[in-house]
Image (cartoon, rainbow, N blue to C red):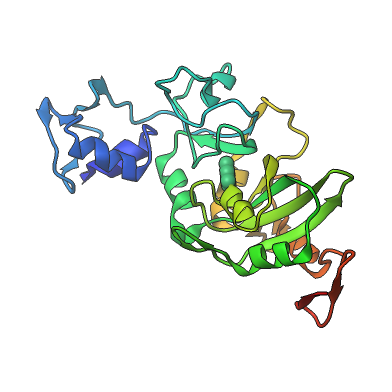
Amino acid sequence: MLERLQKIISAAGITSRRASEELILNGEVTVNGVVVSELGSKADPDKDVITVSGKQLRVSEKRVYILLNKPTGYITALKDSQGRKLVTDLLNGVPERVYPVGRLDYNTEGLLLLTNDGEWANRLMHPRHEVEKEYHVRVRGKIVDQQLRLMADGIELEDGKTAPAVVSLIKDGELNDWISVAIHEGRNRQVRRMCEAVSLSVVRLKRIRYGTLSIGTLKSGQFRYLSEAEARELIDGPQKTAAGKIASGSKERPRVNHVQKRISQSPQPKAGVSKRGAGEIKTK
Ligand code: URA
């Protein structure tokens, strides 16, 4: 069956749909020995010989979905001109050519998804479907409620105002506080920039949840395969059984309610800050 080239390339797990378009425009793709550099060109993956950057496309690779607990000091890319360690270096024994879904900064740790299923990755990364991602952030010094309120309401950044976020204080430490920040958008360095905008200095940043998936007890540097049900649930939401019960792909329950519960448990007012009505905070 004829399909658009960018769809065939992303479905084969080479890269995302958008990056496939770049490859086509850059003249990296051939069909039956002829360079095809026009977007919208079609081919038949079962009949035509398609190459990308000189390598023949293998269309029937098994689809795999991986959840990695990324340590700091690894780059979320498939190659690096500076020779830094790659997240794929941690995937010992994974024969499929997987690539990261979105990115985490070099110094950010936590939940990172990798796959060779381009359509699945596209669904997750598409702004329309942006799945909620939750981060735990250790910040230097003591937080005042106004900083949390500003982050929750949305902050003007250089690339526009951020959408409302779910923000709460989760640990009130001696020298550092920990906050939880849950966002739907996926802008570059978004959490760090949101913190900077309210003068919070980030000491540690860890993604602990991606939609229905939590990092759980996976140790830093370890990974596990997702079941098909978990992978499906992430894009389609929890499936209902005939009896109307929620059939979750993972043993863990979807965490959305958990986060929402925390909104109502907003941080305790601290010295110098008093609370008036619901959702309103007054600095003395
Ligand atoms: N926000 C950031 O600032 N960095 C990340 O790595 C992820 C989200």
